[in-house]
View 1 (cartoon, rainbow, N blue to C red):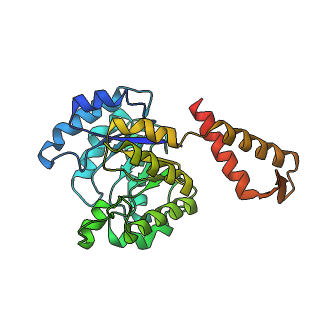
View 2 (spheres, helix red, strand yellow):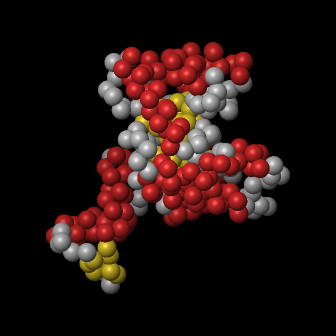
View 3 (cartoon, rainbow, N blue to C red):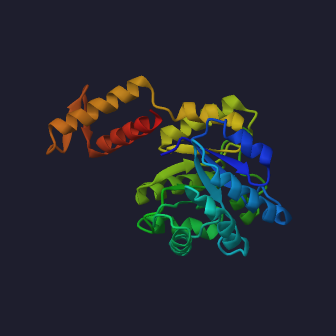
Length: 288
């Protein structure tokens, strides 16, 4: 469970070096949108070198879509660096996860890596048809670790002139996509990661958005600039009171393992409250 995933262009040595000191829980080396097609061969070489140089953060790789010729080239060039996971853009349901799973099996065997080590985080709303397949991710692969979404490709695909209102809030079609990603991730039992906040200079707007994302159930968020990481980490870091309450909930159910519902501070709690408390404490354990 990560609070922040920072995208870093795979073709920028300067930005890759700077990203290591960003404080992000995970870095996503990008070979897709931030790299021009004619720059991808060089970016692959640079990404492979960066991935091989182990860092404190988890290192993920965003490849190009599976139905492109670039995807296999991206994996082949970068896999000697053993990325923690693959971010799959323009995912189109369980069939894409199964296909990527097979590819990763081959690359892990080729490079002597433990089978199943490489995780998958698909971007699940970038194509209109993908919105009707979000239920498929549940049980699709043990590699599936998280799900995220995006509104830019989706709005372009439907011909929209904008996807946010004058206050920066998602318009209804894209708020629907966001919600479906959240529910799809919950159904699959994996982390839901909210999409980027594109105005990296609006720190207060980002802080509000990230706080709302955590309130709604997202476990973390994508970032496009190192300056965004601190606000995202702060929003998704549990406070002292939250931690103490979670510890009390876990202890309460541990003392009464057969109980379906228990009272605490005048509130009735059941198993979903226990699961939420356990999830929060796992994050705290990772941060410590």
